[in-house]
Image (cartoon, rainbow, N blue to C red):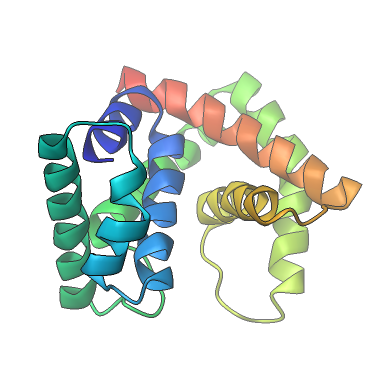
Length: 173
């Protein structure tokens, strides 16, 4: 899992962020019980015992960080959110100077606004956080077999295009 996270971070920062959100939620779903994580998650990986041990240690480190940062119930690791913020800064820069990106974001903007409106005053973050949350929401729906409306599918596609373009710019920086 740690190796996969590191690979994603090097290749696609958006995928890395979504993956880390998923790992946080996985730990929450097992109430941070590392014995259960080891038994029901790690033991099923087709890797050596040494790698399983390293993976269990990695989950333990994540759990400790989550506890230290006070995000056992909700929220995301500061290190992951730092990457979200970096993407947001790239986004704001590209909006000023890149017409292709501006057009891609323009397609996503109505979905961003709809997300803000449906949050009914709750702070759901800046537009890049909204895009990441939309893609993560799509993943969760697919994992649980929940059917999405065509509007939700369109929003997730638009958000994915934004994140793909940002990933290219991120990798170039």
